[in-house]
Image 1: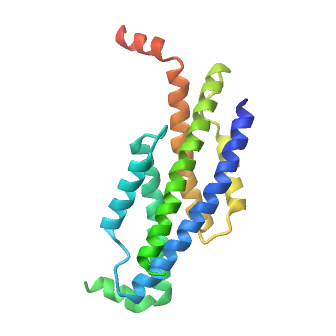
Image 2: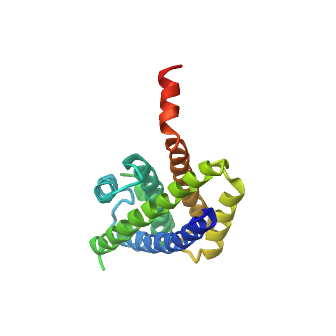
Image 3: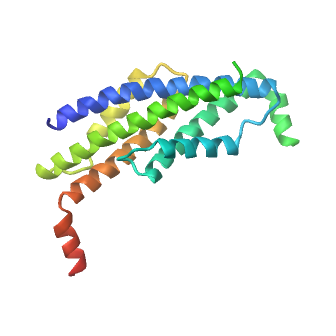
Length: 102
Length: 102
């Protein structure tokens, strides 16, 4: 296989990554709505640690654990951002007010 | 569905992401070896732009284009890092020998 063959394989993988990352985002948005309905904070450090620990256990390489952690920190950041948007969109003002008065 | 159900769905997606990200890394490593054999530079800005443009076209949301770009910039960074390591490792012994006997 030459460089172009491997690049075509990467293109196929990327198409699946785009689909999965968007699917994950839809889950995050649903969680954001539920958290708002139940008056729960968007930021959940324990759950985020759990996600990172879980993917570390699943890792068989060649990505090293640190690289995988950097990737999932970005993935979690973007999910948290969408969760927050979903929670705020449902109820802009009072959500912000709650965060300001813990 | 409650928050725990959505989190279980995220866990399943994450397992697939770990697998795909590692599969992508294996492709990057092969490309790194081929680039070294052909004396090509690891950094290929045109190809990186092409990857970003391609995933932007594939994006159907809910991730916005900027979020997807941030995610793929991280993915490309980690792939480039592995490519570079693979290109260097192919030439590992003489590299190390140089380091040990400066």
